[in-house]
Image (cartoon, rainbow, N blue to C red; front, side, top):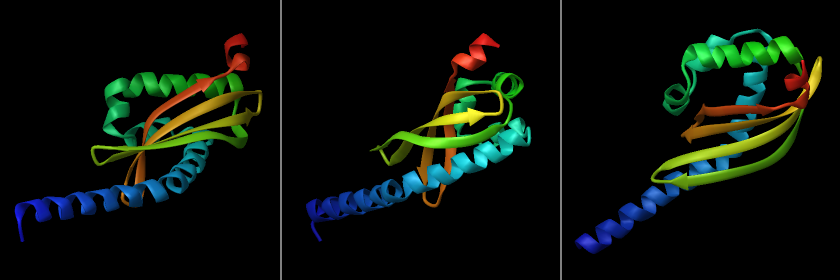
Length: 139
C-alpha cells in the first residue's frame, strides 16, 4: 500500500469516528442536561463540577462554580421545566462539542440556560454552563 493510500484511509477512519460523535452528540447532551438538572435540584454542585470536562475546570474553580449554582438555587429555586431552544454541533481536531440552550422555569423565576458539552464515544462532559435570567438579577 502506498503512503498516499494509507494517509487517505487514515483520514477516512478519523472522519468516520468524529461523525459518530456528531450523530450521537445531541442526544447525549440532552440526556446530560436532564442529569444536570436532577443533580442541581439535589444540591450536588460539587459532583457536577467533578464530572466536568477539563475545560470547565480551567475556566472556573470548584468554589466559583459551586457559588454560581448556589446563587441560582437560592434566587430561583429548583428547576421545574425546561424547553429546548437552539443547538449546534461542531467537530474539529477529533473534538466534538455540542452547545444547547434551554428556556428553563424554576420555582421562583425563569431563565435561559446555555450548556456546552464535549462528546467522546458514548459519553459527554460539561464544558461550560451559563444562565441569563432577569429574575435572578432582580432578587
